[in-house]
View 1 (cartoon, rainbow, N blue to C red):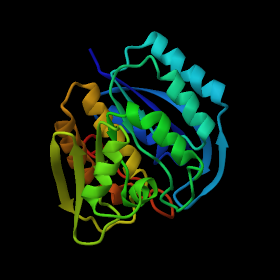
View 2: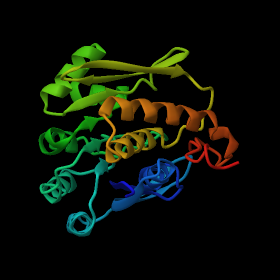
View 3: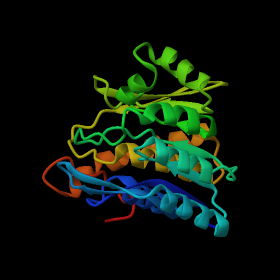
View 4: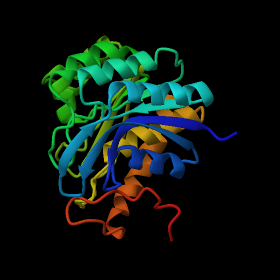
Length: 259
């Protein structure tokens, strides 16, 4: 049977991030994708010009309706935005026992804020303990637990209840980009040469979705991160082939399929 994954995230009208990127990623990984829309954004490769949150009861109804009918093998959570929406998602997922990849989406590639500062505490208290994996980038990690070494930050995040944390190094300097996976059993590093391109829109969404796809297929966490890391690197390498938009274009989700 085909593995099935559910994304709970915002919609990107430009198609490069959010649920559009998640479903493209699931498809590229041979996983069936279901979706719950948490917000509609007016967005392109240059900016987010408007955000329209979906009512909490509608988001919760979407989750319950999908889980009532489908055997969901993994859940990816992206943009939530507000404390009330976070609480609604946590409540609706109370019956779900499978793996959850939580991407703490805070800022779009354009620099526009996607998570209210007041929602950070709610994210920690309501969803961290449910997360199999948390996938913050470096600025998000600082917002969540403050400055410090990557190891110290990871320990602080693990202490908040997440099963494991992948601190992504895309915002660091240097020719090599390294992501660090921390869990209660050890640490793994995943490195690749930094790609000279501005077309990196949707990298965070796609990365977390690719990991969720692997977990849906029964892969071990480390193996799932390793495959997702290699796939995303190729998606970035081929991003310039798409020539989408005038700003920060999307990565190429189907680099292995489109010829």
